[in-house]
Image (tube, rainbow, N blue to C red; front, side, top):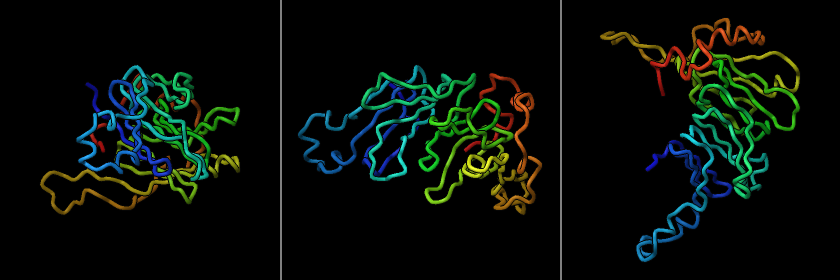
Length: 249
C-alpha cells in the first residue's frame, strides 16, 4: 500500500492531484464528490470515491506533482509535471497517459519542480544546488535562476509579479526574476529575503528567526559561473542531499 507524498489542488478545473510513494499519481474530481451527501455515499459503492485517473508515471516515489497551467485561467489544464526519485522530470498528458515526455534527467533526485504560467516554463532543481527553467518552445538549454549552498526544498511564484522564490535547506529564502534575465539577457540576480538562524541551547535572548538578512553575501548578485565551479560545489554528482541537511522544512 502506497503513501501519499504530495497534494496539489487546481481550482480552475476543480481537481485534486496526489502523488504516491509507489510512483502513481491519483486525480479526483472534487466537484462530483462534494455535491453528494454522506447518506448518498453510504448507499453507493466506494467507486464514487475512487480517483478518475490513476496513472503510473514513475517507477519509484513521486517527489512532486504540479499542473501545467495556462496564463488564461479559463483554460482547463490536462498536463501534469512530476519529478521522482528516478531522476526524471516528466510531462504526462491525461488524454494520452502513455505518451510521456522527459524534459530533464539528472543523476540525483529532483527534490522539487513547479510550472510557472506567465513564463510558460517548468522550474526544477538541478544536480549542482541550482534551479533551472526550461521553456519548451525555446531551443536552448534551461535558464539558471538560482545558485544556493544547500538543497532546494520548495518553490513558489507570484501570479501578479514575475518573481520566483525558493526555500533552501540552509535556512534561506531567495527570490529571483526569471523575466529579467530571459528578456534582457542579463546575468543571474538573486536576493536573500529571509534567513533562519540557529538558536544556541539555553540562550533565551537569541531569536531563532531573523526576518531580514543582515547582509547579502557574495552569491546574492553574481554572474553565471563556469560548469566546473558548479560541480565542485555539489560535493559529488550523486549527492541527493546537501551538506546543510540538518535544517529541514
